[in-house]
Length: 388
Image 1 (cartoon, rainbow, N blue to C red):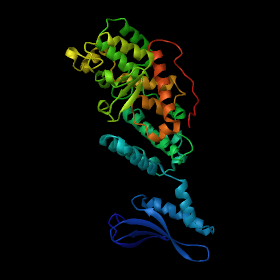
Image 2 (image 1 turned 180 degrees about the vertical axis):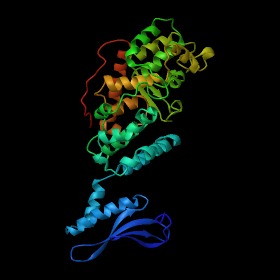
Image 3 (image 1 turned 60 degrees about the horizontal axis):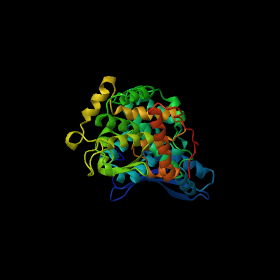
Image 4 (image 1 turned 30 degrees about the vertical axis):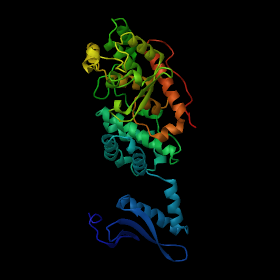
């Protein structure tokens, strides 16, 4: 409270540490220390909005030790700034770079969730020192009790660490394999009950054995592309690039993120499109999976098909994500997140090379299509480091 209400001037904390308050009430930390030759020198430690009192005291202790060793505390301070970035600093840098492409809600949630759950334990740690044990430790309190929040936090911590790797602040990408080993299986996970992926091929076969309807085709397409069912129900023929086997989803279709997104289409997904052509009633640019009268299909149409299983349509995205983690371990986690249209920093895509990143997504979704259709050989081994 003294720091918060400090008036303009120099306020001492002891041992040479001061809080400087300007006439505009801007606050910063400074250390007065005796350097080689007996001279005294003021060393700026940073803004009071960036460093708490305890953090300023720790930096002051380190630089006083440097001065006693006869070294230049300013040079060491500047070297440390260039070399060490905290998780908190990396988070704000990642947010600043990515927020313009996010919805306001997602941008606010990104910061608030990390501030509440992650900063207390990891915020002050150097981003290059954080390992899977640190991440697992901070996720554990909510991982099973609040699985949806736990998954979001794991993804967001991963984004910050991958962003740090791309910026040269961290030697390694975010921990993935070790983290899966340390964290318990969440079971159903999240709000939507998801089908275990082992049961999916039989379910898909049961769909194929029944009469062809737009509802069943829309559900098949939703599962094969791991999309949100509303995106499938609103997909138009003009969104498809069948020559390149891509579904180019415009920003207005992506209500969750507001960002245009491309989905690669597996042979199985393309086969569903071909079957939908046989039921098409208009040559105009219309909905691929239209309801009665060419109008948008109700979400209940898909829900009624899935309801007897006891699972939820949206849960198939979790089914896909669990399968990707357990059956495609060599595919980087960021690729699976991108396949789900979760926001992945541009820096992460650049770290893998954009073209290769899309190719890896195709590899993943093609394998998902084969697995869903009950074909063998869904696991694909790729090099763990696919950078450059």
